[in-house]
Length: 340
Image (cartoon, rainbow, N blue to C red; front, side):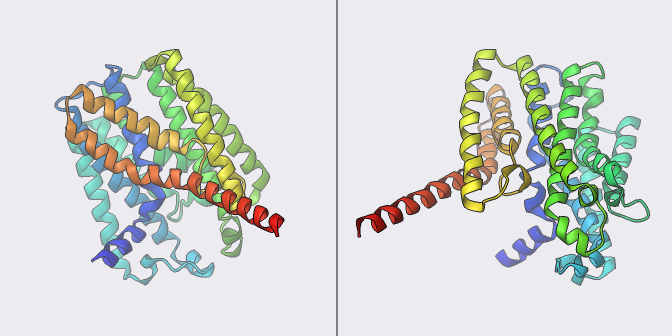
């Protein structure tokens, strides 16, 4: 049973999106609910559950579609993914089922309207066009980067436009922030996959412009940080922002140093620890969800949020702990050799 669940998680590429895309999406309704800008009919907690279902199945859908489209290329570079051993009809049936479940939860969360229908259709099409032929935007250089980020990060968030307001400047700042986060992630992914893409003759933007891709990663990071501070000023007193940033800078420095010590690699160009990932996908979402739970006297939501984020928090904390273990071992080795 455990092995079956593990294989299912591998098939859906659970680790690639569950803690890097779902939490930031859930931050959006929580933020605007707390700001008093979210106009929904019914219970906010029920809405969050439906939104979670929508983004969960949408991410699974988009990643499985990508793997289905890359079966031959993955075989060429030695990647043995589960989908390659499945009958195509079964794989297609799973893809359709994921799309239907995602759309069903979206209807529960956002209702039925012309805007919701059009936005959902465009979202699923763009989520597929990144990898399927004849579109295959992943091989169309810079346009492919824009398409992927917009499809995975911005289009789902745009479902909130009618219930927040077209004139809400904070909403558009969040959309820009989501876009830059997505752009940075796909650039890192392409930089990491550079050698495999060359072997399998997949022509990505980073494959053709490696140094430019690395520079864009740094630029996205800086702009994301600035936008985050600007958004925070709308909801949090400046004194709290200053305290929070001071604490986060310490965590950031320790994590970056840990990556250097343990992996001897650039922390900005690896998925072992992505700068600001813990901020966008742990600290901010957890704080917002707990605030919603407190306002609605929902102990269950608070416990669910803590349980959800606990594994991600442990993984980030474990990185720093392992770094101290390595440094302590080196220290003992030096002292022992010096005493002989």
